[in-house]
Structures are given as C-alpha cells and as structure tokens.
Image 1: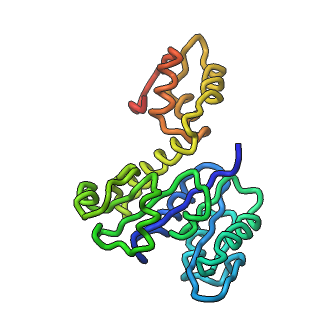
Image 2: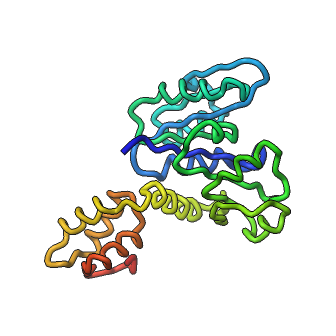
Image 3: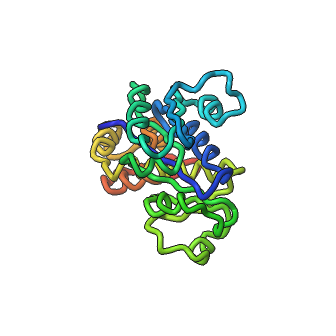
Amino acid sequence: MGRKLICIGGAHSGCGKTTVAENLLRLLPGSWCAVKYTKTAFYTSVRPAPDAEDSKDTSRMREAGADGVVWVQSPETGLKEALSLALDMLPGCEGVMVEGNSPIEFLSPDIVIFVFGKDPGRIKPSASRALRKADLIIHQGDPRSVSAGGLPPLKGEVIRIDLKEADGFRMLKERVVEMLRGGTTEGLRERLLGRARGRTITCAAARKMAEEEGVPYRELGRIADELQIRITNCELGCF
C-alpha cells in the first residue's frame, strides 16, 4: 500500500484549514507529515519549516504531531515541481497532509477536504476549483445553506463540524479512516477471524482491535456481523 495523501483546501483565508489539518494530525493513526503551501508572486522556496516559527501554521502542524513539515512558497507556475520536491523531503511517512487550494490541482490525493467559513457565500475564485474536487466538504453552519448559496451541485459529502468542538473532529477522523481504507477490509476480516474464539469475541477485545486498526467501532461491528461473529459482554453499547 502506497503513501496516503490528504489535501485540505478552503473558501478563503482564516476559514479553518489549519485547524482541520492539525486535528487530523493528532487523531489519525500512523505516521503523518505535512506540507503547507503559500502562494507567492515571483520566488519559489521549498524548505523544512524552522522551529522558531511559533506563530506560523507550520508550527501548529508540528505541535499537532506531524513527523516532518515542509513549507512550500511558490507561484502556481512551477508549483508541480516544488510539490514533488517537498514530498521527496518527507520519506518514511505513512501519509502526508497538504494544506492549500492550488496543490489539489497538481497532486492525485486520496482525499480532498474543503473547508467553508461560516458564510458559505464567501468563496474566492481560486477556491472554486478545489471545491469541485472535494470528497468531504466541512460546513460550520447549516449544511443545507451550502447548496442554497448559489453554488453548483457538489460531488462531495457535506458534513457539519464546529471547529471548536472535539466531537466533530472525532467524527471527521472516523470518516477519513473509512475513506482511506477504500473499502478494503479483507485483511481486517482475517485478523478478526483469528482473534475470535468459537465465533465470539468480547466487547473489550473488539474495542481494542478497532483502536489498533484505526477503524470506527461500528465498522468493526459491521464486519463481525458479516462474519457471524458475536460480540459478548458489551458494556458501553459500542457495537
């Protein structure tokens, strides 16, 4: 399985792209790195983000648990080569989180996440291209107002998240994990069969396995049902 790539775009500056990135970096299982893109008029710079940038988005990503952070500053001309160099500077990561609208056009991400601000009518022209490619669309108000805001029909799944609430990010993490797995559950099915004894597994053992595998409890429960494995001694109602 190759390295996973998540791109995060947004409607405008300050809409919450970095907040989404840092929460996913904290919550997703495995080793993740990050790339921050800043558009410039003329020059190109690709470098590891220095430790001293305490107020920068790159520092927020590092503090959230990114194993490495690269800051790409570039005009759109030449951005493809700059991004390739940035990804080469992050060996060993199981996944890379890329923040910025323009990189979405030059990469082939596994998931594109688009973040609206609280006003769905506020979207800069360059963000519209990223929105059309989004798989998950985060809206901070009533999701119905996205389609009511004069935007074209969207292919992505619209979910409502309060960027100040941890529960919303846990829900987002579970959805992202499901999508990264791409519906490939054969290995998980085999491991679950291996742990079950007489077609039963305890709730505690099932919860532990779900956490180790990085899948939601309900996903493990669904697979157990398909395999006719009974989950016993359920104390928290997880399954």
